[in-house]
Image (cartoon, rainbow, N blue to C red; front, side, top):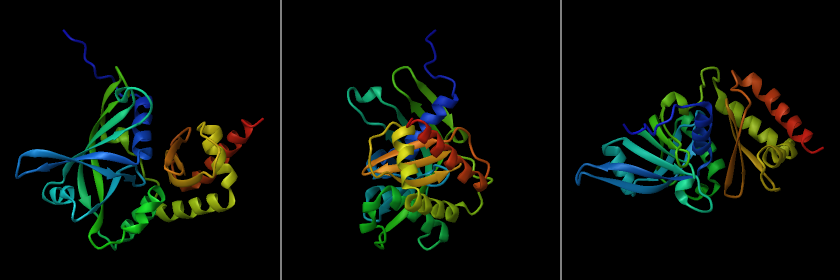
Length: 251
């Protein structure tokens, strides 16, 4: 009997999947064409909501927009890029349903803010009347972490628990602005000392219960917290802890 290639999901696999979801800037979106009966794949920019749910911004003129309107079932492939064999790098296939967000809702405006931090060039067209945000409600996923590392993952393996983070959008926005304006040195140390990245003017663009994202140019890095937070009151102490840890590595 052939050996089952699917491995049990562990914390390392969960961390890798969440890193891909929070840092990959584009992915292949597969939608369903009922008329032809064939799948349709297209390249989309990808952002994330607070819990890690993928967010896409699409034009009414796009084929995949019209297909999502008719059938919200979709799949999104996120892949890490690097040198050598492409199949040696991690990739994640998400199975989801897409839901269009109401343009004027307060939640959509917060998602717009987060998306533009991840994709600042989208400022040129984000408010065009034919564009709209969609959230992909993840049902399950398939993670390939490289040769011999395959996992089937449930929704709870992929998304952060926000149950203790009421009204966190405003808190996050204020914390990001404060860190970038008053503690840019700490943000840079998160990237260079804790993530091993190059020197540069790194900026904080996302905070969630399980970690932060920092960016420089087109690169986004994920710095996971040592443990998941239980509420907004734990954010500041954790950011201070990470800054102290990073400064400790300077000596």
